[in-house]
Length: 402
View (cartoon, rainbow, N blue to C red):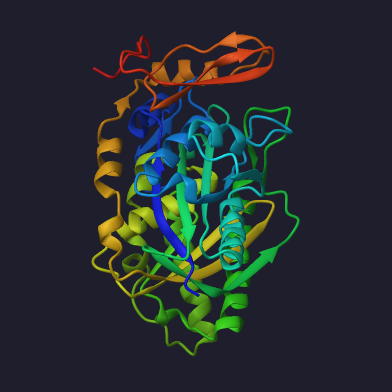
């Protein structure tokens, strides 16, 4: 049975900060960000935009040509959860008007929980081939002011429909996984910002890549030259290039030097969107996949490799075959228009939004900003209230860059 990704789309907040402005404010050479990290811009969510609203926006886009009544389950992958008990999927289920027969739950393991959801979705479709599974993954990457992680911040959401009609990517059965208890990155409940050991995280990422690739290779017997393209989880854009160079070195050592082609040629198409968005945690790998499908030359019938990494750590290497008519179902124009229509923030406006963060009391209203189709209106009696954005919604702040 063919099972895989039928539809795929992503959403990002309407505001962004050009990293040239951040570099000027921090007194560093902009090349440290643009070349060293590979980042040009980072998405900045306002206080009334959270993982629920972003996920609902992405979900609305991906369900444009999918019957909502065919959705059997919605899985929400995030490490920016809004409640310790109630799954964010329940809120998104309501905003998307999914049927009451549709199950909803939330999955967590850092950035790779979206891939865990994908694995579970494939199993569910195999059990019920007539059903479709909606996966939404959304996160806000937030680090402390003047920390090394600050220029890698970002936010975004991805939504994908998994079914027995995989128009975009038919997933292979083989995968390799690696798990180890490592404190390279974590987000305590009592902190708004993530804690990260950057050097350890990169070393752990690369080690997990090697181990999960070896597991995949043992299962499948495939070598690296049997892949046309590769997509990686991108905590920052340059990490994709580092990761692929590392994988090629492993392949050359284990496959008798038979690996060909330069690293950049096989990953570059997947990097475009991340440069403009920044880290989106659980959504990152699949925004990378969107970028590759929407920028590469015709990949019909080609095998692609995907590496998912979640700090802490859990990783997975898997693969799939691109559909023969996949280009007919892409939403690249929507994505490019969305990124092009964003509002650039001044550094001062970014600093102000950062200070506002999210709701911190059980009764509050959030100021109205320029969001997508949904916004967090506030909290009443500790209950989160979401609303659909009207065409006449006011957008008083922040002031855009002149």
